[in-house]
Image (cartoon, rainbow, N blue to C red; front, side, top):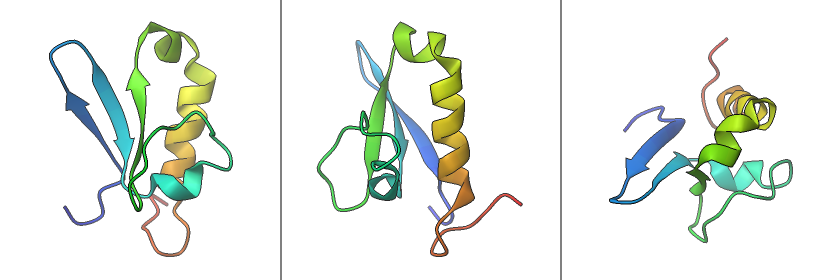
Length: 73
């Protein structure tokens, strides 16, 4: 997908919120998981949803871009 920032992958018992340029986010959000070249994800669970400040910050940072990705502004 062109200009994809984040995505949700659903499994039988869980879901992951993924970021296509997530590797650049790990310095600010070390709880991101994954070992791929660029993608990182965070499991969607009750703790993540309760901590909406962290989730909001993560999503906003992903949308900011880094010069190689787009910005929503």
